[in-house]
Every structure is written in structure tokens, then in C-alpha cells.
Image 1 (cartoon, rainbow, N blue to C red):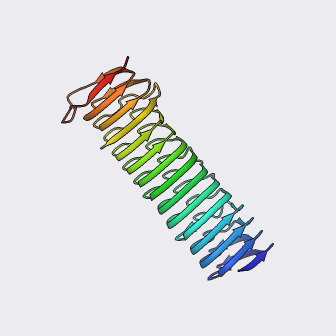
Image 2: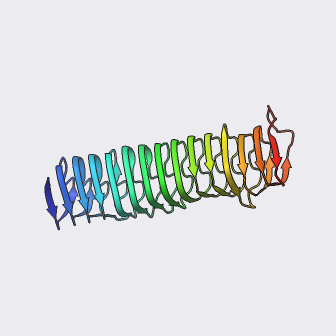
Image 3: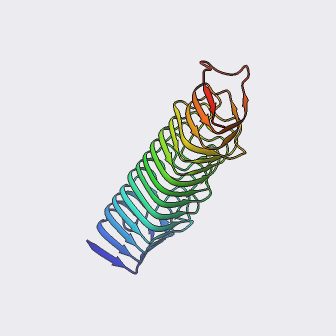
Length: 281
């Protein structure tokens, strides 16, 4: 493998078509498409400033790097990538990719990030700001996620999440086959129109969570006092620790909880309208 150290490249496609190349303390300056149509590329301690610096690369290892604000849409159409210990200040990273793994990565503008990723692993990743991260992605494994972006995990399927703290709204809409363990989910309208959403030992806050859901399962979850109109039109099996302020029009299933503040049932209750609710206290 060839190594380039302590250099800078700018302009249009300066490293186009490179193979088996390691970059150490290299800067990709103003310009476009610094690393494009490449294979087996490593970058350590590098800085990316120009637009679209890493497109159509098969086989990547990126460590201890920095993607500046100007490097928007930096990593697209690149398969089999591992990124570690890196800070990203640019939006719209990671599109149309297979087999992407991130560890100890901070993304400070997560706007439209992780779109249509097939096979995504995140460990100790932080997402700030932006909208719609993870749109349309699948086969996702997460262990350690801090996120305050809006509208996360929409239209995703086959997802497993551990130890996350997600503060947002309209999260997990239209998802399918998603399990979340030991996490904190804050924000309005969680999990609407989901299929096979399974929450285990999670704490949930925000208005109107978990409505219009099919095959919704909760195990030993807790709810904040602000959660009202919970489970509307949902098919739900739930064991809840503590109380729920208000449940509205659950369609079917069985809910067990310590205490229910109030139950709303009105003319809009959908069939089969046979959900059973049991209070322990």
C-alpha cells in the first residue's frame, strides 16, 4: 500500500481512481471530488474541506479525521467503510451505501444523513441538529447513540438499538421490525404507523406516543407525565412500570400497568375494540 504524508490536494478530482492508498495528515482543500472512484483507501489524521470528497469508494478506513462544514455530501455511494474517532461538521453525509460502520464519531450537522444505508453499525455516535437522519435505511445495529436531530429513523426496517438517548419528534414513523433496548425516547408522536416495534426497558416522554401501530410490544417500560392519548388505534401488548397519564382508544391487545390516570374511549374507537387494560394497584 502506498502512503502519502503531510500533503494537501485541491481542485477537481486530484486523487481520482486511486487504489491501495494510505493518507496520513493530508488535507483535501477547496475543490470537488478529491477522492472518487477509488478502492482500498485509508485516511488517518486527515482534514476534508472541499465538497464531495469521498464518492464511489469501495473499501475505506477513516480514523481521527475532520470533515469541515464545506465538505457537504462528503461520503456517498461508498461500500464497506469503517470510520472511527472522527468529527463531522458537514451535512448530508452517507448516502446510498452498503456496510458502513462508525465508532466514536460526532456529527454536528446531521441534516439528511444516513439515507438509504443497507447494513449500518453505530457504536458511541452523537448526532446534533438537522432533520431526517436514517431515512429509508435498513439492517441497522446501534449501541450507544446520543441524538437531538428531528424526525429520526423514518421508513427504516430491521433495526436493533441499545443504550440510546433520542430527543426529537416524529421518530420511528413507518418503521418495521425495530427493537429498542434500555433507551430514553423523548419527543412528540413516537412510533406512529409502525409495524413490529418492540421497546424493552425504555423511558418514553412526549405527547401522543405509539399511535396507529401494528403489533406493538412494550416490556417493562416507563412513561413521563406528559404522555397522553397513548396507543390510539394501536394493536399493543404492554407491561408498563408506573403510571400512564392517559390512554386513548387502544384498538386491541393487553396492557398491564401500575396505575392508569384516565382512559378515553369515544366514537372513533376502531374495531375490534377489545384491548384489555389491567392495573396492578
